[in-house]
Image 1 (tube, helix red, strand yellow):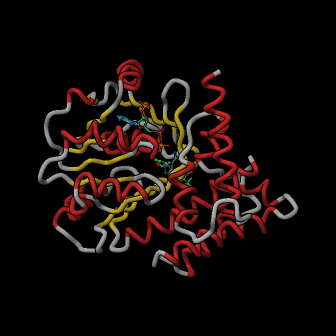
Image 2 (spheres, protein in one colour; image 1 turned 90 degrees about the horizontal axis):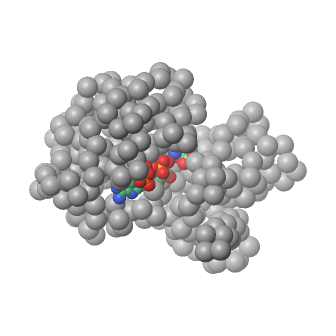
Length: 311
Ligand SMILES: NC(=O)C1=CN([C@@H]2O[C@H](COP(=O)(O)OP(=O)(O)OC[C@H]3O[C@@H](n4cnc5c(N)ncnc54)[C@H](OP(=O)(O)O)[C@@H]3O)[C@@H](O)[C@H]2O)C=CC1
Ligand SMILES: CC(C)(CO)C(=O)C(=O)O
């Protein structure tokens, strides 16, 4: 199975790198700067689950992409989605399947509109990873979980083929008959984690140590849970309990990747992860709900970032 990873960043580089390390046929769609980094240093993964350097991993630029791939794994940030779709379109043929790993849900509508819903699987990954200054991937703990499945839960032929490729490739791969719900569960958790760790500029443990920190966290989680329920995707008691446990663990150094991006002055997925949740929630902009406050805070960061860039 020929696999194209769109992006060799923190998530794409990690999962694509592990697949490559285990002998799968992986190519990365990259841009010039990343292509140069990969050619110079190779694809480097630092992880407690095993370090690896893959010299000169197969990589193409958009202008070199002329033939269809069997599987396209989409691992760009949400704000890069429109350009990415444009760039990987030549790799989408009549038998191509697209597996998106982005957090949130809004990208599903964009992919459906552009390529047709029959091509797009549900997918999500749980990992804490980041790129360092040299472009090496730093896996920050041992979580490395990738969930994928047909949106209607079918055990299709393509799912069987993709499962075969994903299993035993150095990470936890789960073919799921409820992958769409898994995406919602992840979004409820992630939006709560991103919203609260960015608002507080703090890890879960530090938020739990603050007076009112747990209450603010749980209020945001409730806003997100209620939004999922409104959309017909209420997390099960077990999924919600799991999210609540992670978000209130007084020993946990966990932060969201959005906080890492924000602290480094990078663009963030404010509209995709929090704005879209707010838009589906029934809450209004500025109504004082935790979701509305978290969104206003992230948009203020974006405004400051834009102003600094023009000065
Ligand atoms: N990092 C994490 O721990 C986790 C992230 N996620 C989610 O996964 C998604 C990806 O995040 P993450 O991997 O962290 O992001 P990164 O910014 O680390 O990686 C994204 C990569 O996509 C590349 N890219 C974007 N557009 C294109 C394009 N048109 N052509 C080629 N390459 C492109 C970027 O390349 P370039 O360098 O050229 O800009 C970049 O290397 C997000 O939705 C995020 O929320 C989910 C779980 C955990
Ligand atoms: C919550 C987490 C760490 C899990 O993958 C994540 O998705 C993120 O930080 O963006």
